[in-house]
Amino acid sequence: MRWMKSFLVVLTAIAGLVTVSPASAQDVPFTYGVWRNPKNSVHVEIKPCGGGRACGFVVWANDDAKADAKKGGTPELVGLQLLRDFQLQKNGSWKGKVFVPDLNMNFNGTADFPDATTMKAKGCLIGGFLCKSQTWRRVDVAARGMPSS
Image: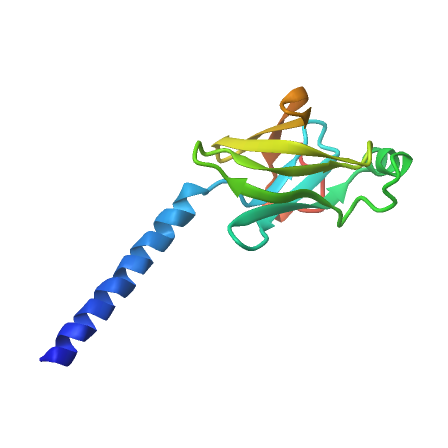
């Protein structure tokens, strides 16, 4: 009878973990995937990078974006990590570092996901001053590598 009680305790704990895991995943349902900037000149794939953090890598860029990056000192834009160590904040925003290849500089950045197709991105120089905001859109995974309209 004692082993049955232990078994039920373990089973309950496992069931609790299974229940918690999907709920945690639902907290960030729109974050991961491929996103395009407002000019549709760069596509970035956001994915987990360990420790509950998210990172973003360029998976496609048009020739103009590649040329701008080269002028800024970044020889290869595709494959470059633009978003580093983004962490989910208590208010639902993601916060981390953003690399801007045209300027060859890192900035503090935030990202909010108001719906499944919209990312509101914001980068600031120092202490929230000199900020720039952009609205990025989700790219259909099937269209990766090709610009979407």
